[in-house]
Length: 308
Image (cartoon, rainbow, N blue to C red):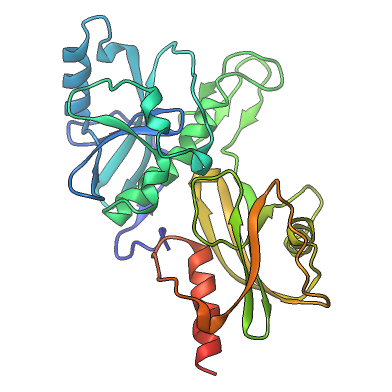
């Protein structure tokens, strides 16, 4: 999966520091990030010295003094910072993995040699460790973007100098990064697995049942509810598999396997899904993408069925 970058290590612990020349700058607009392609899938991001030079050169009205830089994370010895333009009204679409492939076209580049690419590009971008850093950075960026002001009293927030926390100097409210728990569900029936396709998304490949955990629910209850809502099926024997951080939706995904309980007739929730069907293990032709929990779970089911 995309977080499996061993022997490299991602460290997201916040430290108060300023960028150096060779540190990487992530500059987001909406659901796009400033980068450039080198080859088909290799994405390169500006170093701090490139960003500073490019901004100052591009427009004498827009200098690097108009930007603030917040430490995000590191992968081994490579440090990543978020660039934020001071006083800029944040516009554009913040829809993460639901963004279409042309989402970046609504923005003009800010420095020569780089353009904005949609965050869905991270799914297949190389190198993998840097793609995981970018997805994680998008999650953190969304939290900063949405918490300029205190949700309790409306006053501007400030950054704590010891941890990744925004605080309100007026009322004392402390705001930590938001992580949304969600489930990925593989519903099986002997040698068959339930595959779906999303409605209204750019991701066109096969998927599994998925949904967010509601207040007061256990994850197992979420599994049952989401399967029933999206397909009208009942399930039993729910077993936890693995988890995955998924920054494109600001989530922590928990994967579960479960078995069909009763009638196998699918009643599709068309607002969420464009397709739902039973597929035999021997008919599954998907390959491992090394990225998603969903794909790993489908292939694990196929392998176990075909080796019995």
